[in-house]
Amino acid sequence: MAKRLAWLLLAACLILTACNTTSTLKKETAPKSASEAKEQPKKEQSKKEHTKKEQKKGKEQAQEKDAEKEQEQQSAETGIKFTKIHVPLTETKKENGHVTSRSVYTYGQDKLNPERVETYDVQNELIELVVIEKIEVRTERKSYLDKDNNIIRYYVITRNENGKIEEQLLFNGSNKLIAIEEYDYDDAGRTAEWRVYNGNETLLSYNVYTYKNGRNTRVDSYSANGILAEYFINEYDKNGNVICESAYDKDDNLLAQHRSTFRNGLIYREEFQGEDKKLQWYINYTYSEQYLKVLKTTYSGDGRELEQVEQSCLLFDR
Image 1 (tube, one colour):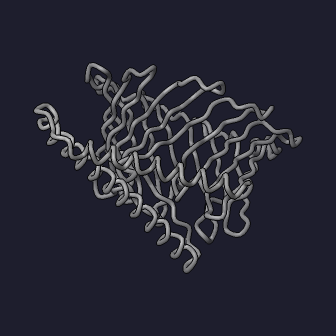
Image 2 (tube, one colour):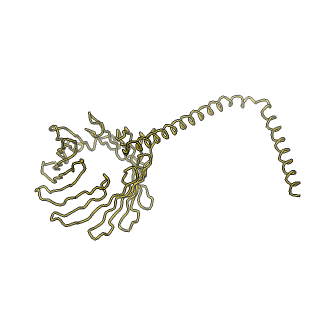
Image 3 (tube, one colour):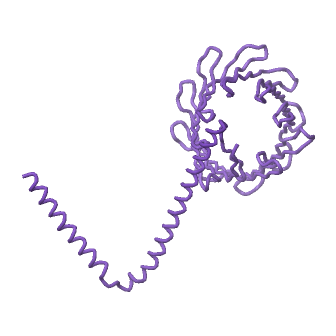
């Protein structure tokens, strides 16, 4: 009985298929009306454009996969982590969908650090200017100016022979020294200690850095008299990206956490949590045009959009 039912169902399916085929053939061979004849070129053009888009999308996806495989192979062979650096050319900030400011970055010989940043309001009027200029071979000045070209504050930065900051002095617009930062490095060129002083050169606090397997796993922060105030623990993924930064007080109580999600060497999400591990705010990153455009959207803990930052960038491997 079951076999007979199966044969009947199969016969019915064959008859239905034959009917559908005949109907389709009739439709395909039926003469086209004048309106259909006019629409045909448009449909063909639309189909061609769709095919081109799909081919372009497929090519981009293939290039991304090839790049990922190449990075994985290089990482396996050399043990070096590959992270991508986004260097902004322009930046547009939005709140509630409306533009609030726009910045333009200008670079000199150093393609990673701008020598000039101009920020404009919605009326395209300059509201802030940042200028970085060389004073001596290893010393530079970074000045923040208002729309009237008045200096708001500036930093005098001294670097060591490897280009890393040794000392940073902060002055206000009246040339009064506000703060001093000093950096010490170990034999491997890693930050070993950081100290901050007030304008009277009185030590305020200092940090000591601890490394394990070449990675900074802990930072201890001390008061001026050497008492531990708080400390920070860093966790890494297999590629060497910091995926969790946790801050604790001296009694080991959690103060805050910063979590990051990476894919293919790029950051895609950041989360900021309080001492109760409740989400305070987060940032989502979206990339387009072969990663040359970045959209950073900041949300409150309950998902309310706070700000959008759109960047057009250059992309470097490090």
